[in-house]
Length: 134
Image (cartoon, rainbow, N blue to C red; front, side):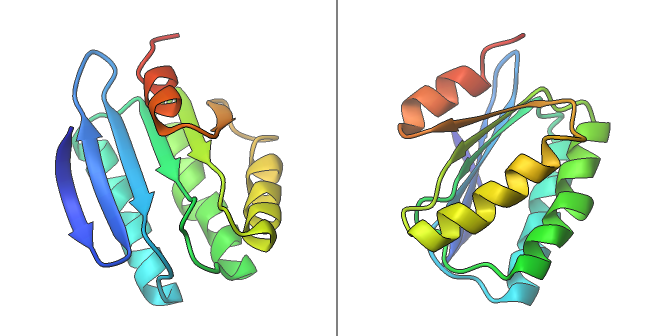
């Protein structure tokens, strides 16, 4: 696991291998402009390293505005789908309201995405699933 980006509210890691995985570990709240900027940066890193899966650890993610989640669906998830992403593992936020709002966005997005989305409670299980081809 190699660190690609380290910020006070987010770490981005690359898991190399036959099925490269990008991992985003949210550490807390990020203001809207920062949230969008780092999400675009993660997308660029994913494309640069030809990742086939993402692990998104949202457990400590702070509040996210609904319009930012709508933006994620179109500006991040759709391009990931177009780039050939195969798997997307998510660890749900610990905060119940965040879990509900973010879960709703992923449920809605899954209707149009071709990659598989799974929720996990354990980071190691999420990583193993994401790195497993097909």
